[in-house]
Amino acid sequence: MSKSLAKNRFKSILDRAFDRFFDIYLIKCFLSDPSLQNVNLSSFKAFEYDDSDFDSCLRAYQESKGENIFTETATIEDLDNAITEWYTQYSKLIPEFKNEFKEKKLISESDFIKFYKEDEVDRYCEYCKITESEISSLIDSKKIHTKRLATRGRFMEVDRIKPNEGYVKGNLAHSCYWCNNAKTDEFNAEEFKPIGEAIGKVLRARK
View 1 (cartoon, one colour):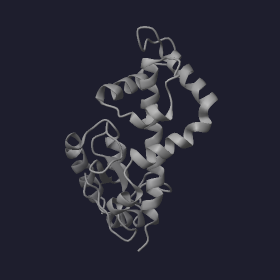
View 2 (cartoon, helix red, strand yellow):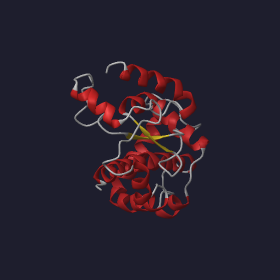
View 3 (tube, helix red, strand yellow):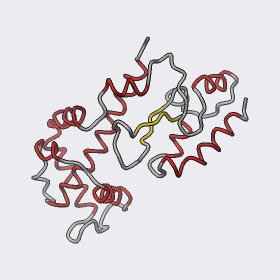
């Protein structure tokens, strides 16, 4: 049985998850040393973020760029400049960090394939319960309207059940494009449950 869908999905998750984790790591490093001289593979190996670290990262994303205060002595612009400068000087080191992340801080590819399952399996959305075969029928009958169908929608995506946690075993769920797009990183699984049920009801009413 083919596993190409799972392998491609794993690759896209690796890229996205690493970028997010590395952002949090750089911001945490900036908070203790704005020069980012403390960024190195050894400290990265030891790094695990908690809610306070994630909140700092979220604040950096949400604040307007420029002179908005990030710490008592630094602005968002200072943070952006420090990170830009680090990438300018040390971008060649990224593969080392990414390999460490893949090996130690992400679900393994084999475990991910077991979770996502073979191409032939009719996966279903954990939130609205719609199946890939039902989606295919809606597409064939021209009842799916998203403009993103060329790249998203036909197959289940992968959601982090607890948005603040990573792509690790026990925190993954199959999610259709519509639920994944609506849930984003705003809602946890319990909060999103009634929204998912409503999405499923609307989609099935199109049959």
